[in-house]
Length: 454
Image (cartoon, rainbow, N blue to C red; front, side, top):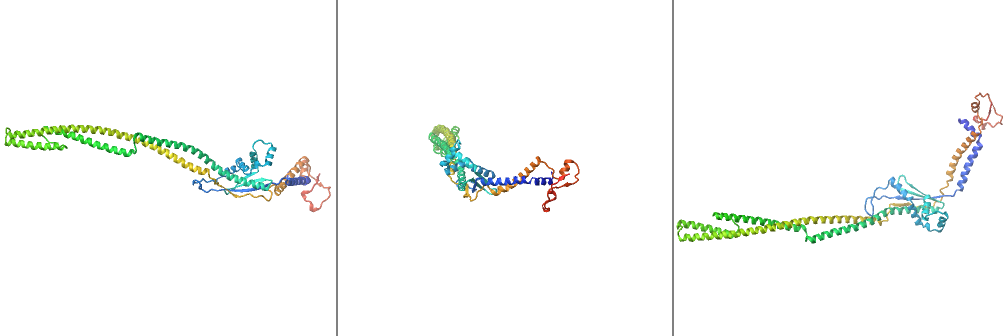
């Protein structure tokens, strides 16, 4: 089918085509006039991002992302938000609404039934270039749709607060229980330290250990001195038997040594002057023997005393070593207990700090959602849109009229042009005759001629 055949078919069926076109337009007009009028109210909310939480002082993450906005749209369109609207407006307490719910025969709660009805008329749209969200609500009453749009905006604002506060409240309850456990652990650790100090008699381990260490060093020095005195006494005994000299710290022994040396010198001098048989010589010799006997007696006594002091000092040194080692071990154990107390104290303080912060968040009523524009009762209805419906009806009527015209032509096919006759008979056309009444020339075009072909 070429364009000329298509135009001739439409001209031949113009009455039916025009009828379908007019019926479509009239039907659209009547339906648009009979449909109930619907109004749409719009409220606008703004998602603010201050960067820092005014309560905790923490830096907030950037919220203006596509995923975050999509989540907020789902929050506004959620059943929980709709239930908040029902509770705010107290729609479930209205007697007429209750009667409609009972007449509907729907099983369940009237609050959820109203929430489902409200969500059907709710439309939420995000802004493409900003962090604004438009809340649209449709209905038959202008004042009612404005009230509902504003109610959903306020409910979303309250929901954003709840979504922030409720996790903080749950965390605060958990932290309260944990703080009690940490407090008990801290008290137990402190009691262990106090009991250990009482049992060991320790007030300050480090100071007492320093004192005991100094005492140990003093005993070590005394032991060295006692050992040196013993060695000096032994050497003195050997030297005395040989007639030698030794430096001993005892002043009495030193004095006896000096006297013995002088007496021996006098004895040697007397032997040269008087001879061994002289009575004076014998007297000096007796004095020398007396000094030797006294020196030996005092040397032995000093040696015994030195040995006794050395043994006592050694015993005291061993006891002091044992005490120092015990204090060192006690200090190590006390340090472990103090470290346990410090860890329990640190955990308790961190949990308490976190509890204070979450408690502030749990009692905060600050929201990141601000209502920018409240909805007002619309003056004109939103639907049906008569102008748009008529434009669409013209387009749809044109398509339907042409389609029905072609459909009828398919069931009732006729010869309208010479091309139709040529394609049908496969014979040349000698001429055409038109026996219809002539029409004015201005109304006739070459392709509009209707002829019978022969």
